[in-house]
Length: 58
Image (tube, rainbow, N blue to C red):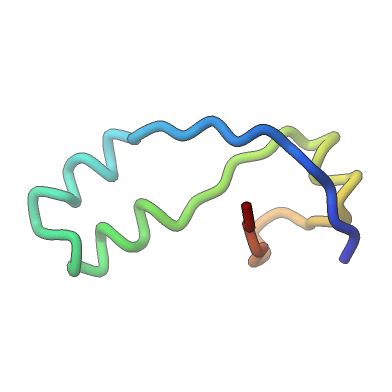
């Protein structure tokens, strides 16, 4: 898989906020925090398909 450099902008979704009420060890919280949204052009550049796992590093 190719490596590309992007600027990451973080935010808290409504789903993440609601899941936090159940605790950070709850599976709902993990699921809400395990989402990375990208522009389709960036996905194409990186060779990423929709609904696949990716690795984010800094």
